[in-house]
Length: 304
Ligand SMILES: [Zn+2]
Ligand SMILES: [Zn+2]
Image (cartoon, rainbow, N blue to C red; front, side, top):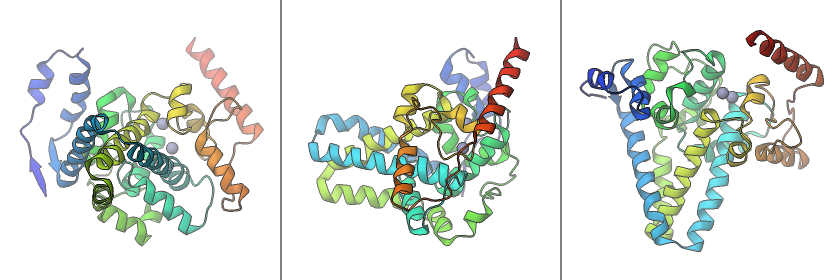
């Protein structure tokens, strides 16, 4: 199903380009302006969690706060450890049941289903710093936080996948029933969690557990690629903010490579190694680190 909306191209192009919101809306006018049912569902969810988050402070409850904090870590690690370091980069191996557990937690972080996320991240690494990059920070705050998730076909076209829903970079995930099931039933999972929270503690648990928690996790996860390389971003994004390191060594399970670069996801992977659950953990060698630093210095000299 697709809902056609009148083009706003001419209006937006006439408005003052220095206004940041208008600037970041421009990406929307670069391709045909179509809304698909998937995009509409995403906009519904993003609106719902923001409205609930605004209500949350007015119905404070310690139990609801504890649930929100617990769910923030679970769903946050679901994205950083499950979606990103495990599925996108295969930086380590864990038993299948644990992989599915982390990925299922990630499906509640409002970063869409694993097929979309992994496919988009692979395209991001392939096309980074070019116009085909699906997670292009030059498109602005609104694009990286919202637009990216609300125009599936735009992203597909940008990365050379003519029709949406092809997910050509992730055949190994498409071959697993669990991931196609999560893709096909994606919106039912946050709906079920919202119903559980409401039945357990009413509107208060719903506002904290879905609203506040959803907004925090979703925006911090998006922040990792938008504003990175800053220590506080790395702290808040469970270590994903060391984005320069990650682009230099995409397969490394550890993103914070220096002792002072705090990386909570790496601490969790170390714990999983300690208890014998994680193996084949990929880390850059000293020779690789030296080669990257020499390349970086040569690049800096050229730029001068
Ligand atoms: Zn990545
Ligand atoms: Zn990146």
